[in-house]
Image (cartoon, rainbow, N blue to C red; front, side):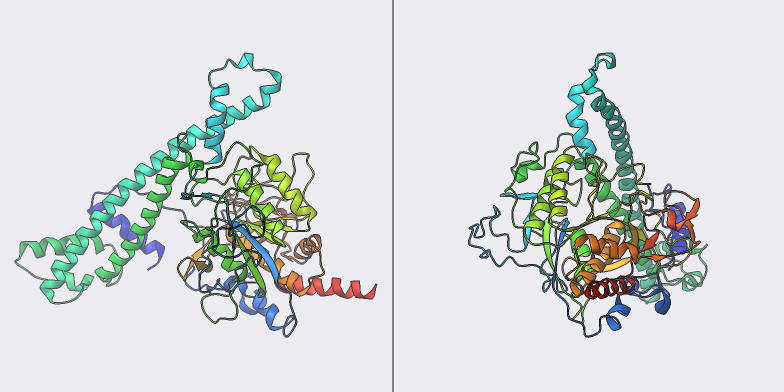
Length: 564
């Protein structure tokens, strides 16, 4: 059943059950995915007619029979299910550490860090919800400026006071909005659950009277009965189905309704977490960690639980990069010769903290990561200097840092999503790539409607809509966002580097940028608006990552180097 038909049914159902209008995510800008291949992002634009990365074509042609070197990729995220059937063989193992002996064998400050480290864990467990950075800034700045006379603000405090005004406005607006959304979703969830139960009961009553498992619209219409209960059930169901074309089965309608209720449940959970944790000035997640949250340079805290309580996001990201391509199950990652370090710094609900980001980057570098994938971001960075120091360290060590541009439909030339490639001194990291999200068709909807962009800040775009990958418990799911586009670009970078290991991080970045596919004259819908703009104005390169073109360019660079 299409989303359009489901909406019609739900409107009818709302009238029957006296339900008010309901909140729902706007998916009108996304194409119907019914006929889109699950692995579309691996496919080739010319051969397969999808705006994918040409990964499969690359392996079948340019890389056929060629040797490769294992590339180590750190996934700094919400955690990874390291036992997943499609990931367990590509997870990094620290051979300098003895598993489970409770001793820091390699003396790096992290006990039993066999597969990575969890910087949001402690002796009592792991953080699965935290406040947003705007909440933490609001809490920090309120006692300093909330009651002060603006005329008495000292010159040295003026910038921070201006920040306080922005933070205060944003925090209060977002808290109110999320509380209202939580109330709406909760109410609608209860009403639809009750409606589902009522209609299921009616279907059962009528089906039993007819001696069938479920009834259709036509069988309802032809039903005659003197039983008041059956008659009421019949009339209730017909009122729901009377405006629906075709002879639909009640069971099919109920299944669609159940799926919609599950979506509502996700909304309830999301806004509940936002209100109870994200915007709660009294909540302190760091009691679990046991660190000093005000010391951005503190080290050697956390635990070795790299999965945590909700590893869906990180597991999905890891699968995109390197899910086992040789086991004939599940999905195929982009890179065929990687090992993934699991580093947990991102709570499933709430914002990551600067000190954890910094420590995660340093840990990745110190344990040999050549690429670091960072599919996260936030609006504020109160300890940016600590993150800058870690990024600089990675840059000096020749590590490629890949960062998701974010999903607000904003121009990053005008606003920041932290962490960023730009240091406080305005210089930029030369081994950093910022990745936007694209879709599968070469038309005005090529750029994902949610993706951030920036002619000066975003390097290129990569597939980020309906990406099918690994999720915890040996499951698989479609997710979308620049969080998915970033590991696709990371996967292509790892692919190129594994076959051309002599290249440097800056050369890999240049290979991906220079080889990105261009779309001369193509105008696309600008994210966050209905305006159309040239695609080449939304990123530095004006292009989309492509494995085939990247390998061809890397071959040229290798050939030129050999001639010298």
